[in-house]
Length: 268
Image 1 (cartoon, rainbow, N blue to C red):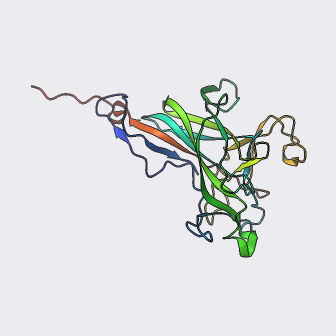
Image 2: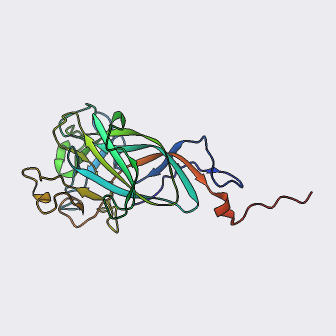
Image 3: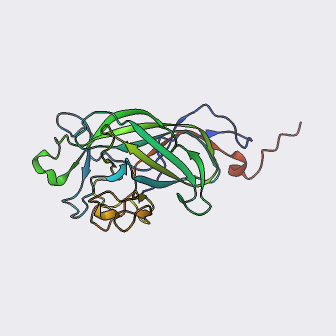
C-alpha cells in the first residue's frame, strides 16, 4: 500500500524551479504497523499478526539483519523535488525488551538494488546511520490467545537514521537496509505493514529480502536463494506485503511544472 502521508507539508515556490526550503517534516510514509492503539496491557500500542483471521499469514516479522537485507520502493511525484535528510525504520529482536538497537545502515538506490545500471544515490552501508532507538508498539499475534494484548516478547523499536541532505528529482527509488539489535549476532526482524482486516498490503509485490551467503544454518527459506533479492509473502499465505518506513525532509513543488509556464508580469 504505497501512499504518501496526509501530514505532508508542501512548500510551494511561485515562479521558481527549486530552492532551499525551511519546512523539514515527514514527507513519506510507506504504511502503518499499529492495529490497536493503546490496547496493550499495561500500556502501549499493539501491532497484531492476523494469523487466526487469515490462516497461514504467520509472519511476525521479516528478517532484517544482521546479515540479511530488506528493500522497498518509493516514488517522488512528478513536479516535486525532495530533499531527504532522515529515515525512520522499524525493528525488533525477540526477548530484548526495551534495549536499544545498535546499528542501522541504508542505501538509497535509483533503480533496483544491485541491478544493472542501478545507481547508489546515497551509500550508508559503510558507517552506522542510527541516531536513536525508541521503544514503540508491541508485536503480537491473534494465536497468542489470552496473552495477545499483554505479550511482551517483541517490542518494536522506532529507529531514526540520519542522511546527509539528498536531493531527489521525480522518479522511483529504493531504500535498502540492514539492522543490528541489542544482541549483536542474533537475528532481528522488521514487521510488515499491517492493516487490521486486510491480509495483504501490496497488490503487485515490490518489497524484497536478500539472504546472506552462505545461508545461515537452519534457514530453509533461503536454501535456494543465497545472495539474491527475492519477493516474500506474509508467512506461508499467498499474500504479498509492504515494509514500513518513513522519510523526513522537505518537499518542494516545481511551479513551472505545475502551471506550465512562468507567470507573465503585469504591463507597467
